[in-house]
Length: 365
Image (tube, rainbow, N blue to C red; front, top):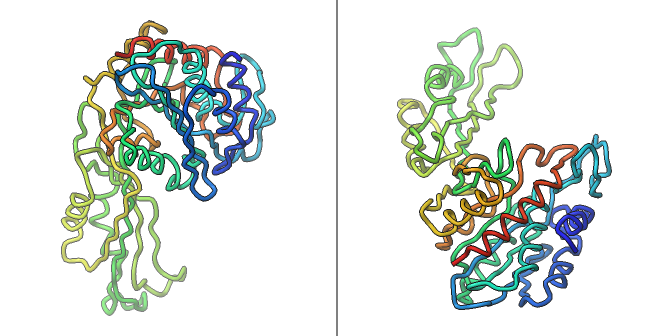
């Protein structure tokens, strides 16, 4: 089976989170000369395949076989790999069955390697991700089998294939702010404390403000207001309280404590309550590490492109790996139709991604 045939097989299998569509069993059989470990948790399927070729470092390829629901309005069958106008359409073509097909085929075609090669796959990346990759990593830590480096084959390229490697990701902090006032008649504002009025002035110095200056790899952390509501949808009663929600995609320079101080500074003298939650934490892999440098060389050898190092975008399962001391990066096809109707990629990109992974494996020391 060639990489495109394998790719079409994966895309043609419906595997909406947390259903793997039987793909983990299929991949286990496809790589039958690898040792297989299942770490299934409740309805989530997790697979770790590994093979020790030599005494060198352990290189892992990671990803997910689950996809988001197709939604409505497709011009093709979403759970079938359809070739059309030079593209291959189907849910998961970019995110991330192209990546999975490419590294599975690259590993299957590997005859010699200097260390241990492995694959980590889950069916719970697009969902809450609480029973997916993190559970496998916890198991591997217990067994003293954690990889030295991991490549997550998420779609990373921006304008052309090969132009970006993810060497880190921002975190995500959610804020829930309540400003307390005193309800009253709109005709007697002096007898009430209007929380809308209390927030009006400081909000202009909060909404959309950069909380830091960013750095070489990270954009500044921005205070993004996502919802404000107060009152009873009537015109003659001032509200008793105001609720505001916000999100900060934080780099390594901003954390929950600094956000608390930022809010306190601008709401001084106002009675309020603030709750912060964090679903993911920022990380960055040193660009001088072996996996970053070798991947950049592999991309250059295949595409003749000098790739850039990026931290843009949302979150991925790479966020779970960095805290375990694993050097983790992400590299995959272009990211321009993920989660959208008529998600698509090109055969050329999938073939080149396969070649990049083959080159990386060949150069690994």
